[in-house]
Image 1 (cartoon, rainbow, N blue to C red):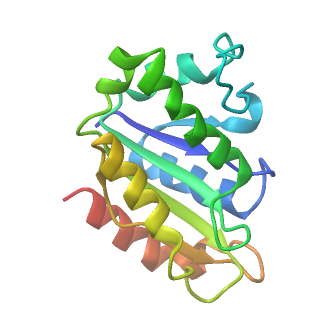
Image 2 (cartoon, one colour):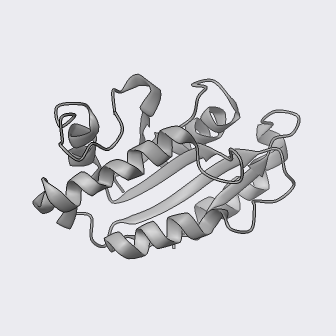
Image 3 (spheres, helix red, strand yellow):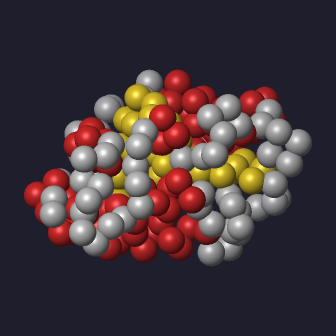
Length: 167
């Protein structure tokens, strides 16, 4: 399977990065860190059309499965991931053909945070985005990292997640 893991965090070496790199390794997926790209905010005049958003989307539409990795910031996705999803509007206006290629693409979210459980409404934003764009949303993986990411502590949850998304 041609999978892609996209890290959207303020820290390229933080808890979410460590979790997402482990998932990418086990899925034998390509890994993209949004911090290494230039993706600007949505602009109604599309002055940012030459940034890294469209090339990344061209890569995404060729994937069989995409995992978005984000820390939980203020009960929601990171600013980097929100900016990225805001840019999907370009796929509804100036790059419609590219946007149509997203239909049916399976996606999932992996997240880390300090709360014992994922906030109750956290998944809703991803479910709504997936529904609107015709993506297939799969159950997320959440790892509480109050004391930092510990692979052994999250081993069972990671394996359960991998089993769920491969079915």
